[in-house]
Length: 147
Picture 1 (cartoon, one colour):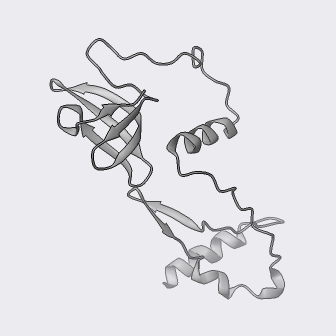
Picture 2 (cartoon, helix red, strand yellow):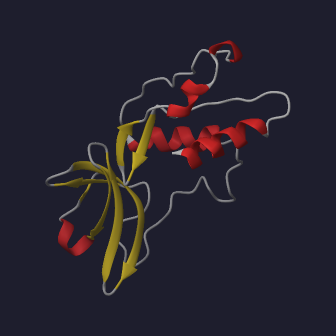
Picture 3 (cartoon, one colour):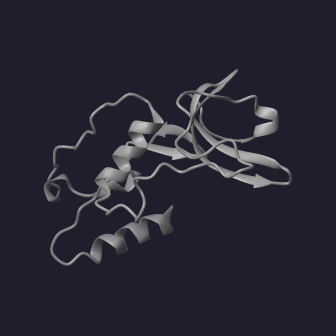
C-alpha cells in the first residue's frame, strides 16, 4: 500500500496548475457490471484543497445494445466511413451479419455484432440485453433470425 500511496502522490505533484481527480461509479469486468469505489487515498487530501464539481449523470436509456452502440458512435464525433450507410450483406456461406436481430431459445433477443466462418461453421458474436456478449457456433446455437 505504501507504493500505491507513493504513486498517487507522485501523480498529484506532477500537475502544474490544476488537477482533476475523477472516478468511475461503475466498471465492467469480464462483461459483468459492478459498482466501483473511489480510491482510498482521496481521503488523505485535505478537504480545503478540494473543490467538488456536480457529477454529470448520463440519461437513462433502455438496456438495448442498439441504443448503447449507436449513442457511442454518434457522440464519438467521427465521420462515417465511406459506404457506412450501406447495410452489410451476408456472404454466400454466412447466414448472420452485423446489425441483425436474432432470437435465442434461452437468452432471448440479441444483436449480432460480428460473424465469421471458421472450421466449416459460422461463429457469431451476439449481444443479449440481459446477459451481455456471447460467442456462439451457429450450428449449435439454434438462433432464429428476427425480421
